[in-house]
Length: 162
Image (tube, rainbow, N blue to C red; front, side):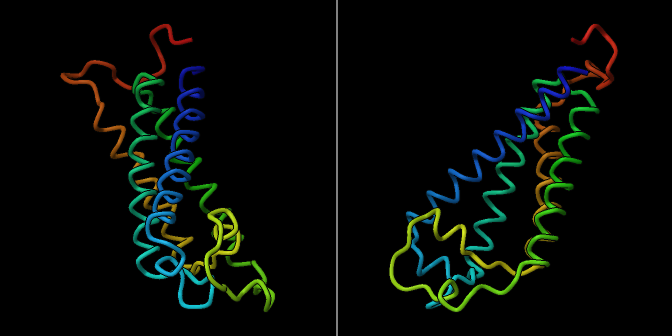
């Protein structure tokens, strides 16, 4: 069980790191004018697709890491999927309840720093709803990439796990 919990935690940390690095590189390479609608912090469809792509890759890597650490435990995989869905649902709720940005925060002029842009970005609610689904599917897919062959490791918690 301890390996499963560690797998969940490390898998999620890896996912978070891949997303931060991937989106930062994407933003630095493509620029604010590509990521946002002109003069605003409303994300473009291109940025949304990049977010989904980076998030899906991050979830696959997180699923692989979780599966390897937890020794293919169903508890580890299910725990990471649940964590992704729960945190994604909380994020979607936050997007739903977020007040409209103040007029001075809604206007984008020129180049902005990565973290300023991320803090002011406005994404559609549907993106926040779909994102945890994409993440959960990526975690499951990633775990299947490192699945034991020929019935080895039934995914249970028995067998001297510590």
